[in-house]
Image (tube, rainbow, N blue to C red; front, side, top):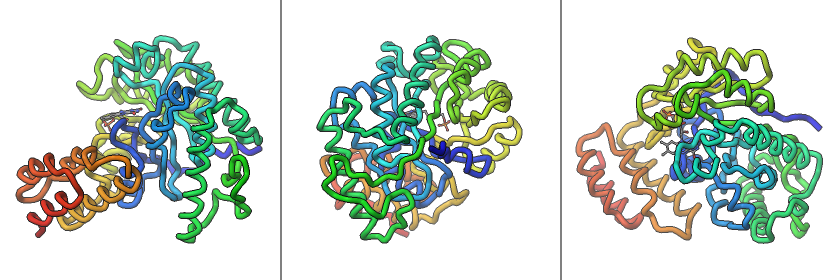
Length: 371
Ligand SMILES: Cc1cc2nc3c(=O)[nH]c(=O)nc-3n(C[C@H](O)[C@H](O)[C@H](O)COP(=O)(O)O)c2cc1C
């Protein structure tokens, strides 16, 4: 069984969309993929404990579009057995990789020992990586998702997603590189994804209250993740101060002695800046987070015209409603305000969009500012 690591195949330095909770949902990933073409895209983080409990709605943000861009599902939690199940879910949904969040500074996550809380506990952190790697291997070798204790509701979500996306793939004539031609409806779990061992990666920070980069990354490397993304801040810093790229360089040096890739992250505003940093600090790639808010073009190194900006705002709303027909348009308000920059009347338009409550009202506001 080949270890089919897309990480190794990507041209370096790779430049990807960072995971952002409440932001990098299916619609944002699809729009960023279409207008920016990043090398890899991450989901928002998903709690493995909820998957274990059978809570289906946490999987809504894992719905994704057909694309050749590698997609990584990110999970957080503390229970290696729950991570094992989550890897099966991601693999069944067709994700190209699974990432373990060891960097979230949110009190609600760290107080249970998850996210950046794992930096203080390398032993469980390594156990989680090992459990995910085992799951990826077991799934790749043919173990059925219906045999790993997932609830019927989660299995049903997977079935429905596969049936729906296969129909989309066929309707769009999408080359079924990842999907077998002999897809058969009606099997217990429709066998539509070609099995291979998906790579397991980690995203973390340089320390808890002070940088302990070499010690912490050294521990992670013992478990052999395919890649580590390192945000150059400690948990205590949250998003304050500057990301410390010298610490990231220390980690890159350690990783060079292994097969693990090191991806740097923090304060990167453009592709050219990302390439400079990669060269200067010896990393294999860079993830861009906040600079991609309302700016899918950042990955293409392009500034859109105001007309393009408006067209993509409406398209993003439409895609959001297609992914989440169960929701109203409100979660799109923040995205819309992020798009509102670089044209006359942008601040005024932002204020109006913050009150918009439907796609029709958003279109109406945008039309008032059309060039
Ligand atoms: C709104 C928001 C949500 C985030 N959610 C996640 C998350 O779910 N998982 C994660 O690993 N990092 C998360 N992050 C951290 C980013 O992935 C990234 O590490 C951080 O923003 C620094 O990169 P940047 O300077 O390019 O934004 C989040 C950041 C922001 C701003």
